[in-house]
Each structure stands twice: as structure tokens, then as C-alpha cells.
Image (cartoon, rainbow, N blue to C red; front, side):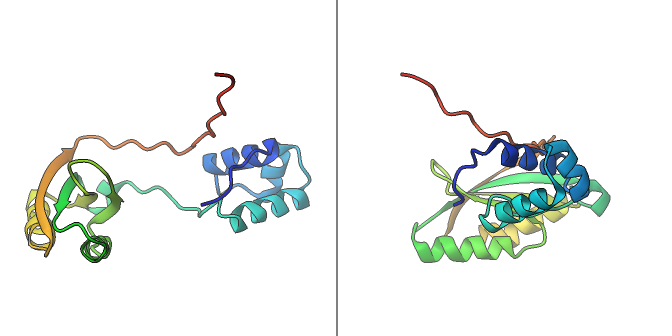
Length: 161
């Protein structure tokens, strides 16, 4: 896990790159009020420290023929490292999987799927999830809308009692 970022210039660079990771170093430097060489060095440092973990394009899943999204909540039994690891690896390797989260609570795993239609969803649930060794139960919810923040601001430390 990366150390918290407190430098105001670094925080501004992170924010600007989240807004537009395709902007030139010169444009980024101008927005941050830094020299281009300093900006490049700071961005490289943020990458090396694991603060900036990558750059990617957002894709409309419907444009890729994946108009139906679902969250599948899975309970595993027994709960041990081997079962959990093998199930997570199994699901992460599936092309329909867009996200996998290991959680606490009644369920153990949430799988975010993006598929073509209800038939495809049924196939994945029956053939890849429910029948997997160690899966005790699953519950599926369809996503009507999925929103994700593209810019994540740091949380200010609390002051006082």
C-alpha cells in the first residue's frame, strides 16, 4: 500500500491526471504551476511509489455487446485460503467478469459481471459460479445503472476531538 500523499503539488497532479490522463506533460505542468521537468519527475515518483497505479480508457460496456450487468454475491464453504484463492482466480479469468471483491458479512465475494443478455448470465451463474467446488450459495442482483467516480479526492484528516 502506498504512503499517503500530502504534498499539495502532488495532490493537484493526481487530480489533473484523473480528469485527463492523456494531457501532455507541458499542459499538466502549466496547470500545476511547475516546470515540465519537475512535473515529469513528480509523476514518475508517484508511479514508482504506487500512488498512480495505471492509466486506462473508460468503455461503454453496451458498445462491446455487454448490455446486462449483474452483481453476484457468493458464500463459500469451507472458508479457507485454498477455496477462496482458487475461486477468485477462477472468476477473475472469466471474460464476463469486470470486478471481484472479497468482503466481510453474510457473503464472501461479490462478482461484477457484464454479459450480453439473460441467457449468458444464466450460463455463467450455473456453469462457472454455482457449480464451482466450495460455492455454498449465490445471490444475483441486476444492475440498472452503474456509476463510478473518475476523480477521487483525498480525505482531509480530522481535526480535534
